Length: 470
Image 1 (cartoon, one colour):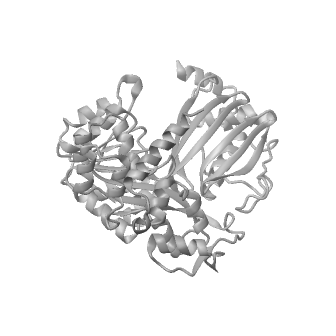
Image 2 (image 1 turned 30 degrees about the horizontal axis):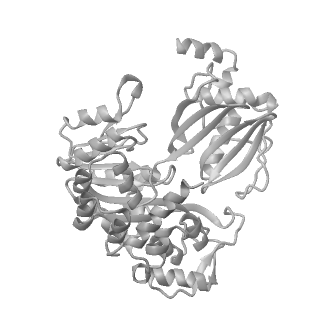
Image 3 (image 1 turned 30 degrees about the vertical axis):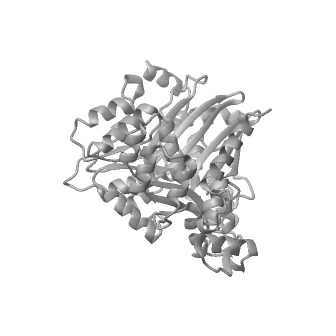
């Protein structure tokens, strides 16, 4: 039925609009060149250029510019197209009202969406060789009051194939992760916001663990990268193939290592933890900001404390910071405030750091992104504290008591400031220093903490009460 509807709609389009060809190029008459800072808007000849070529050019050009997403925002006069580069959205072009419907229809056709349905959200995908790079495009369509909004997520897995050693880990963090994945059983969690590179890190771990003497099975939604030698299972909730049901079947497949695409609910969390304590190494991702929040989130999902304490082996939290442009960054003296941050966090006297300036080849002084990590290896003391129900404040004090056991996100970020990979402004933008736990443990350092764990816990309870006060 769907195929008949699709063919009926496609017949109203030109034969050119049916062709899925990403190798088209744009002539100088069709497109006006702009620099990477996007001071001007890209233009197309909509009267003389087929819509199929325009859509192809937008996708290819966004990939060349290093974009992670393409936004098609509808408005009364047409479509406003923006592309996200290094975490920021930039104006790209405006599509006139006369081409609005054709543009949306074209994207939906190549994404295998139902072009007759405009009232409900839809998800699609485009897979193919684009600009000599294997790229997956995830497409989302959302009805709005101005028409359908489409977002194309550009997924480039070249970093996953490059290996763990090329993901921006410091030497200490890299060695800690190698210790984590060498443990025969337990659960390792990679945490962070959407688009922070969690899947890249997990896939790199899988590549490292993928040997002939191991049975590796993954359950994902969707399968983002096909890896030879690994059994990958696609979730399909419409037919009852959920994370929970897939995991229960996987445990009967004699696995050595299990990868769960994402821990989303209580059922998945409980099965993942129980799998880890029954002799399997489990890798997964979860949307939290840091190690302590990850432990709290799993407890909120009703995972039994004694099981979580026994199962959890390590937590890798990460965010993406914009990378300084190597062609225009320059050294400057540190301020007194910056000197204090380096002294208290790294115990270093720093007099000069790199800052951004901006040039025609970068985006306001930045070009690309680099991950900032917090890597926590769970030791026996922390496991016992989790199992015994230790308070959040005392658990935090225990985690940061031995700084050889953890590299905080602030410390990792500041080290990358020292190497000139990013700026201190970018690190302070990512990591809120006014947050209490950052002030107490990650900025001032444990030696300078004035508050006891009891005082911190009392302050947390007071803050929670104030949220509900009138």
